[in-house]
Image (cartoon, rainbow, N blue to C red; front, side, top):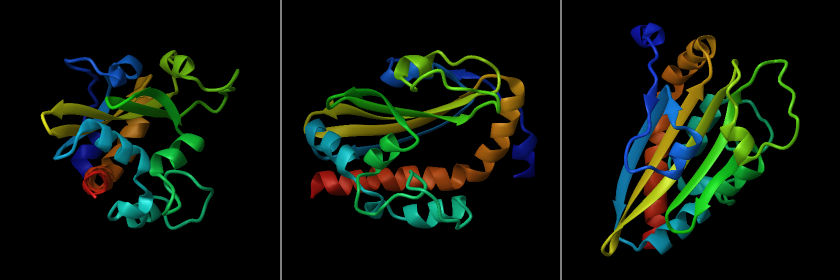
Length: 200
């Protein structure tokens, strides 16, 4: 862990084929990618993505409670009601829907770090999100992408974070390397919950 805290941060870029996620975070310094094959058509998997709740994701409540140090707080993705779809909670609190292609891909994003003097000039929109380049920002985006394969569907989820300058990269790196194991477990459990719902 100590070595990870001081390891250099390098920039990466999206690969091929291009995804909607690439439109909003084409370059990034931090990411995680998980995949699962589900024996169901893409339409059913897509619906399950939108309907899966926090209560269906194993360890979600435990890990998010640890992440916020047990403190109560407003409803958001780290403090989500058990019976409301988790994406609905995310996009009505701290996340923005960046893309929603029926039966193909959903992308959501948020600003995780902003300079103290940052003043919003209007609502955060996909265009504004894509255009943030000034120093002091870290942007996070996550997708769910579906690739049909006969009667099955390959479901992938990728999270990317782009920090706009070196100081913000170093600041976010310390946080990322601590929360990454729990974050990866949540993502895998989230995919499993989507599979259970799609097959129910």
